Image (cartoon, each protein chain N blue to C red):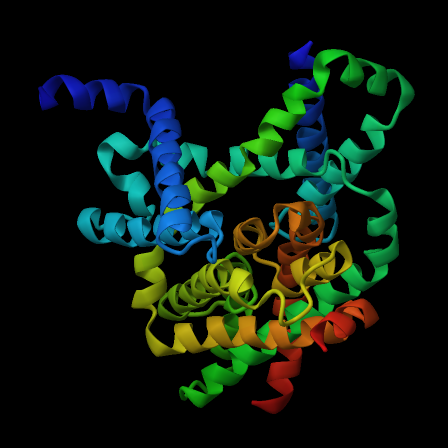
Length: 122
Length: 253
């Protein structure tokens, strides 16, 4: 049943966010530390588990695949609700700081990503 | 006629958002093929157009939620909000190669710390160039260059002025939006073509929305790898910026 897939996805997200929240509290922060990442790892691990895999193979998988495919439109909606006006209102300092951080990070990418990236870069 | 249309659209806001975004993407797919003959990815076009509409929405309504502040388009706020976004991001992990994650796991982890430090340094550097001399403001602006959440968290913890906190949020927004726009343009040149590089990229940039949209416009297959490391960034930033990094700034000023 499709709902099993949706429920598995929801379960992973909730557990991941709760663990991320607990990790944040433990570190003394008011932020969720890696909740989504934990949820993703959980989904990968659980979907390979024998009993769950048999359910996914017999009709539950579309419940996850649908949301996987909805990712792009959701991201487009997310772009459409960004506070672009505030970003531009921040003036030159905000523009330089934000853009500078992005460019510096891009420059570091081939260095940190290792050989494979450098080959392509050549 | 308008009197009967708008209430229906408003009452079914999420459905309206599905239709609206669907039409927007159909338009971009058509434009991508016709106007740019496939040279610009239609998803990159859709994200760009989304940002443009967000600017128009923000200008017209004066709100801070872009297009979602238009009364009959509030559903966009829900569709593009944190809940569904996180749900869809986790769904992208389905079918991911575990070996790739194991192989690049360490590099990904290192890149998160390097990413926070480098963004903080650049942000703090520009704060100094623009004339700030007190360590609290410098650290808050540096934190804002990490993400628009790390900025205000750091500013509040250190007791920065509300002007500086607002500026740090703006810096974070600029970062997030420029990652969305620039990633598809320079991905190939910096070797962002395989899962390992995507994990490092997510860790370096950190802005979950920027990474999510930037990779979606570059190569949807890379999304889960980048999102996975990016999700640790804000937490690490909130940990390092008001503590170690603030003390480092204090040593200079």
